[in-house]
Amino acid sequence: MLQFLTCGESHGKYLTAILEGMPSGLEVDPDFINRELARRQQGFGRGGRQKIEKDEIEFTGGVYQGKTTGAPVGFLLQNEDFKINELPQLFRPRPGHADLAGALKYREGIREILERASARETAIRTAVGAFCKLFLLEFEIEVTGHVIQIGKAKLEEEVSFDQILKRREGSEVNCVSREIERHMIAEIQRAMKNKDTVGGKYEIRARGVPIGLGSHVHYKRKLDGRIAQALMSMQSVKAVEFGIGALEAETPGSEAHDEIFYDAKGGYYHKTNRAGGITGGMTNGAEILVRATMKPISTLRRELRSVNMKTKKEEKADFERSDVCAVPAGSVIGEAIVAFEIADAMLEKFGGDSLLETKRNYEGYLKQVKTQ
Ligand SMILES: Cc1cc2nc3c(=O)[nH]c(=O)nc-3n(C[C@H](O)[C@H](O)[C@H](O)COP(=O)(O)O)c2cc1C
Image (cartoon, rainbow, N blue to C red; front, side):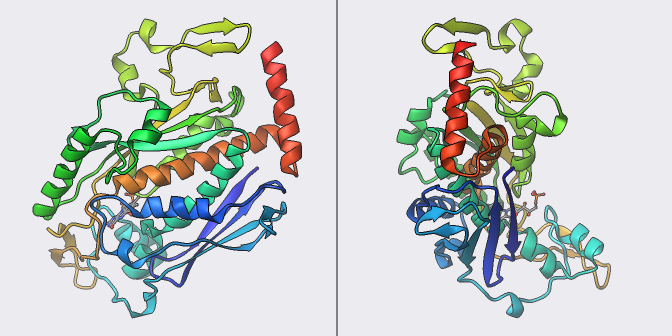
């Protein structure tokens, strides 16, 4: 239903995207999108690039007098660090990057590969996701996220959606606990000192999501599968889990599922959320709760071993300016990615060329499930 393509290189002139399938009549708030872009640029452990860039969205189509028209929406971000044609070629592929496979497969230099594989692309994905958040807010659906682990520093406490919004404010690592934040920053500082890098984990939550988005009938329509694919496509994500996730393996069935209750006013509900809000590929009415694990940044000051592709001799990998930890930024990008997938599932289910029509269909469905 909803689809987008991104285009652009890390040090190219622009990053662009075209979002297709958004109904007409949605009020576009560029300030909201710019705030999300600024959130993506923050976080202790980022490299020098974030000081250069000042991401501000421009619309190149599909928006007229502040509202969507139903036509494809064009997004544009300028790269202040535009210097792709002056940058040197690389010959020693960096382990953990797309360099080696990309250069061999495309018969191109490493520069051409890394410019596109770079996570700078997530800036434009964040803009598209922020746009989708605006759409979701029309249905009182909110998406948020926070960092729950950096290196060995872990947040063990369970927190509510409101607590995430309130307590992560002002955190340098997008964490809800000041005490855990200190440990997380210490992990990043230790990595910096050792010329190393560090990964971690973030959690994304969506509330207000109606029951029945996605479907059990076809593997590609399962919403958990769609969200997992999309999060996995984010640079450096290596694992995705819903609800109690990997703990399912050691949890008895009696404690692994969400029992069903009914309330005459609110309809069906669960008292627990072990499934992370999705069962059988469909939302079950609970909050969507998904976590993604990011590997440590691949570019190390303490260079890893590689091979010079010209001489085939063992040499240290090339070095490009780099972050030490990108998990706080990852959590913001994760929100955007999940927002797009929920918006897509909403439009798949409720359709509509105008927002008014989508809302009418949505309200009719809500009435139906309440009385069923
Ligand atoms: C927000 C963000 C920033 C990143 N910054 C860097 C970086 O500065 N240096 C680096 O080597 N990798 C960085 N990465 C990770 C690489 O882009 C990623 O590991 C690489 O493209 C290979 O993809 P894969 O890890 O998904 O296999 C970043 C990832 C994200 C999400």
